[in-house]
Every structure is written in structure tokens, then in C-alpha cells.
Length: 193
Image 1: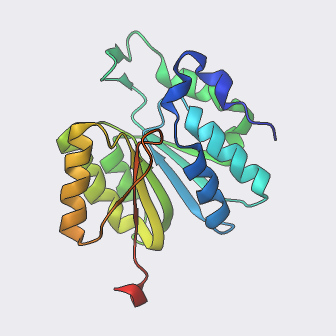
Image 2: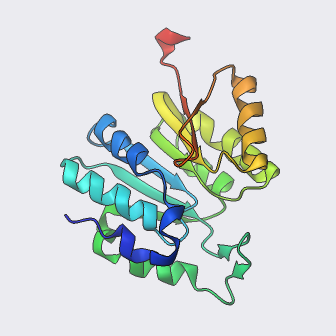
Image 3: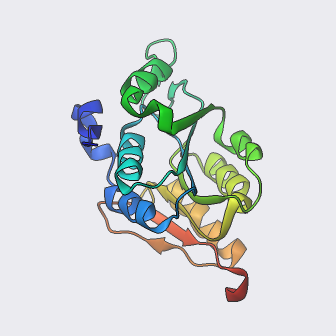
């Protein structure tokens, strides 16, 4: 399937900067694995992830978690921007490969069993409190050997929360390059602890 993610947000194409990470995840996560994007906005990065998964021939279970009420940081709220409608329209070509969960991100974590998620990418609210909640809520859901990652490490509240969390769990995070602007933590297998 041909990628179409660039057409979904042409004016803000640079917002999705982690294509290489998503491509690597699709290669690494086995058939039937669970991939979760936390903070889906209008689906640009998900469109890329889903097409990569389809093209790999694997049948990943892909979830999008978002409240779908607008971006509070851009000032675009539900009343002036129909985020849910845009998300549905944008992902229509791959809708059958996706399970959307319309919920606050930390609350959505309760729908997943502990140690059941191969990969989760956090890009939801960027306040210190919100990121802390997301990290705490989603970490138990990651399988041993799985990858927990997120965007906007250059944003001071995100960096602070990730640094605190990394110290709390005694596992260092990897910082991606300047462009990708992501953090990555691999959950150790039981034998690595």
C-alpha cells in the first residue's frame, strides 16, 4: 500500500518526525503484536504506522488513544475544530486495521492487561502532571522486552517527567536525534533484571 500520511497535514508535515522509529518497530514487533499510539491528533503518524504494518505482511493490533477534543496547546478546541471527524476521514483508507479509543490517555491504559503491549508511543498532553500520569499508567502495560517511547523530549515538562520516571524505574532512557525528538525505554526481559 502506498503511504498517504503526507497528504493529511501538509502545512504541519514536520510534526511527524519519528518515521524511522515507527519503521523499526514494525520490523521488530512480531505478527499479532500490540502497538499503541497515545495522542493521535488527526492521524498522520498513525497512517504511516498502519501502512508500514500492512506492507510488512504482519497483522499487528494497532490502537489510537486520544480524547479527540482538540489540541489544548494550539488553542484549537472541540467547538472550533472537529478533531474526531478529521481523524476518521484521514484514516478511512486503513480504518479496518485500527482500534480507536476515545478517552483520556491515562484512563485508557486500564483497558489493557499488564505486560500486553509490545510498543506504546506517548504524545498526548505535555504538562508535567499529564506526562507523569501517562508514564505511570502505561509502563505496567509494556511487555518485558517491549518498547515504551514518546515525543517532544525537548519540551521541558516532558523531559523532566521522563528523567524522573527513568530514575524511578532505574532504567535509562535513550534520547533520539534532534529531529526525531523522542525518548525510548526498552523494558528488560525477566532474565535481564
